[in-house]
Image (cartoon, rainbow, N blue to C red; front, top):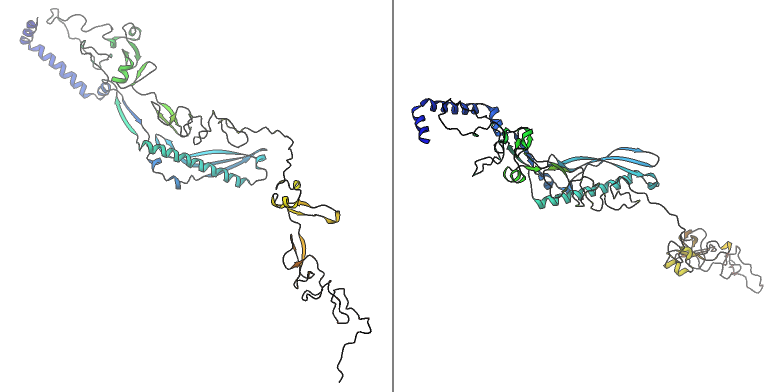
Length: 455
C-alpha cells in the first residue's frame, strides 16, 4: 500500500504542486489577516491585581493634617446636626491615597444643657481626629509588616492556550474549534489514497465535540459553554491547573469572578465601607462585608452590646440608645464630708473631714454653732498700740482674726497703749485716758494744784 502511494506521488508531479499551493495559500491568508490572528490568539484580557501601598507607608502621620472642617449646621426641637468633612487615606483603584470623607454629628440639646455648642463640637471632633490618626497608624503598621507592594498587570490571550494533546490517542482533551476550517480534497472516482471512513467526520461525536451544536453536545459527552467555546469537555483540574483559568459555578472561566472586599483594620470581622478593593480571592486583613461603623475600634461592630447614653453607636445601628431613667429616692448617708456638711457635728470634723467652717451664723437668733462651706467674715480693727482695742478708722473683713487686729473699735487713741477703755483715768490731766469721752475732774481738795511759775 505504501509503495503504491510512493509511486503515485513520484509519477504525478501535479499532486505535489496542488498540496504545496494549498499549504502556501493557507499560510499566506493566515499571516495577512489581523482578524484571523486575533481569532487564533483569542481575546486580549488585561487584569490588574495587588495594591500600591507606597503612599500609606511613606506618609508622616505625626504631622498629617486632616483639614477637619464644619461646613453646615442645622437644628430641630431636640438636636443640633453638624455636617463636617476631612481628608484621610483610603484605597481607590487599588492605590492607597488621600480620599475625602463627609459625616454628620448629632448633638442632643437636652444633653448639652447650656454648654457651648462650639466648644463641645471641638472636643468631639478632636476625638474623631485622634481616632482617625490611630486607625491610619494601625493600617501603616500592618502594611509595613507586609512590605511595599505594587499593582501588577497581566495580559492573557484566549484561543490556543490550554489545549492539551493526549499522548496515546493524539486527541485534544478539550474540544477545539478550528479557526481555519479544514477543506476536504476532491476524491476521484478511482481513489489514489485509501482514505478510511471517519477521518473527516460529518457529525459530532466524543472525539470531535466542536462539530456538536447545543442539542447534541450532552449526548456526545461534552458540556455546552456557548459563544466561542461551544461544546467542550472540561473539569476543574484542567481549568485551574492546566489552563490557569478560574472554576466557579461548575464552569471554567477565562477571567476571575472578582468580589469586593473591605479593610478590617481592627480585626473584628466587619469591614470599612470606605476602604474597598476587588480581588478573585480573599485578601489578608480584608473581609467580604462593609458593616463596621468604626474600623479603628474592635469593640464597635454590629455584634457589640450597645451602651446607652454615651453618645457612641456601639452596635452600628445608627443610633445611641437612650437610657431609661428610673427615679429612686436617694438615701442619706450618715457621714460627714464636703458634700454633707450638715452632718458634721463638731468643729474638728467640720474643719478636717468636711473642709468647712465652724461658727454661729446668727447670734441674734440664738443659733448653735454649725458647719458651713464658706467662712463667716467679720470686721476687725487695727490695733497699732497692741492694747487689745482697735481703731475705728482702720477696719477690714476677715474670716479669722489676723495679727495686729482686734474685733472691737473702742480705742480712742491707737498710738498710745496707756489710753484705752480699761485704763485708769487721771483727773485734770487734759487726757481722756479711759476713752469715756471726758477728762476726769479731781474732786479731792487735798490734791495739790498744779504748780505754775510766777514771774
